[in-house]
Amino acid sequence: MNQETSKNVQAFKDIAISTKNRIFLIQHPKKTDKHKIVVDGCMITYTGIVFDLMNPDPDLITLEDIAHGLAFNSRWNGATKRLYTIAEHSIRVSLHFNHDKERRLTALFHDAEEAYWGDIIKPLKEIIKINSPEVLEKMRRLRALIYQKYKIPHWDVSLEDWYEL
Image (cartoon, rainbow, N blue to C red; front, side, top):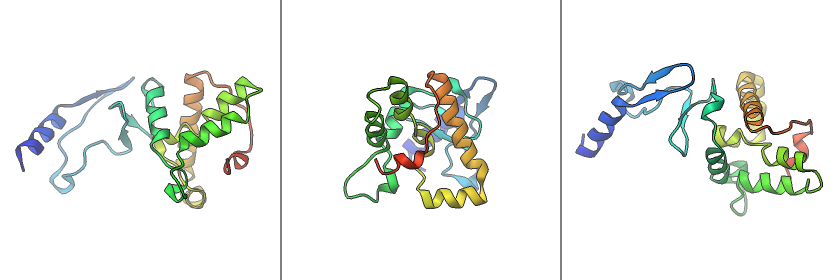
């Protein structure tokens, strides 16, 4: 192990992550899993927050992480003629609601949970729906938390209508 890697491992041993109701101490990974750097079910966001996807804490959701996550994730797994990000898609959808500020805001944030979960292409979502529907429920729950935190009005609309924008 080189000196830089050793310093990183030591730093990781000492990191404490404080969340609303509990404190986790990230331990040095087991020898059998020496590349693991974060707790299962969690991710490290752009701003450096360790975010639990399975039990999201609204206090750890930030607009900066949402904006960055959407701007750096491609739609359709990048299988497009040019870069087409979730952020661009969300902006395009919101522009269809210039006449209605509430709907425009909802449209802008309609895929906000994908800043954390990524864009899951429709064929894969169908497989997940059958085999692991709780994952899609966790995604919906995160979107609801984001809407609640930022007081974004919720209104029902078929998201199918937005796929092609």
